[in-house]
Length: 225
View 1 (cartoon, rainbow, N blue to C red):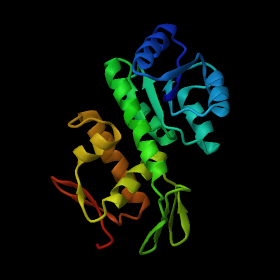
View 2: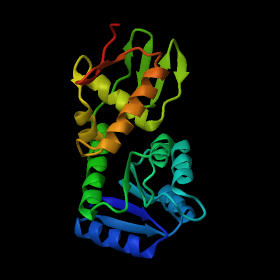
View 3: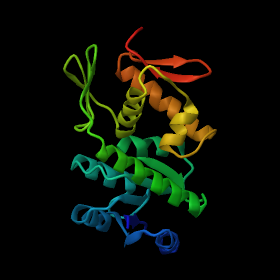
View 4: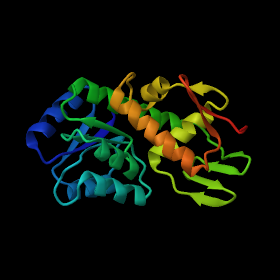
């Protein structure tokens, strides 16, 4: 049974989420504020954290930053009532794995949660060796990226996208493929813009090398210019 921590100060929302996740076979733990969620996340091994963006004591962003700083890489799904693209990007930059508006169907939230847990388990099962190409070094287990031995600061989502592109080195990866892998959806205008922004920032951090755009098709990881 998968263990999930749901942190939300709105009782009606947390009760509804608790009901749907228990019906889906999850072992659910509830927290009413960021401090309680932090304490629980430190003490127990959860398969997923489902966090409200706006909570007392610690909000979702602060909580994620604290956990990632402590090297806690449990999958995190953020829920918020705010339809704000900047907030979405802030959440991903802080180390969240996915982001959904509270207005979406509860079944979709459960499906996204299952997808995050499955990807995390698949990663743990694979013995990932460090990757090197030209002057780029990628340590998948330590989640470090270096160029000429200089550490490159990537957000968790940027690192995840880089890892996915490296796994498909030499292949053209479409936006739909990225959307389906990371968000479980396709043809979403909002998520497509998010993908483009993340790829753009990642390319800039890699000195506009390695990741190439194929107009009308997607992206490709390739050493050649």
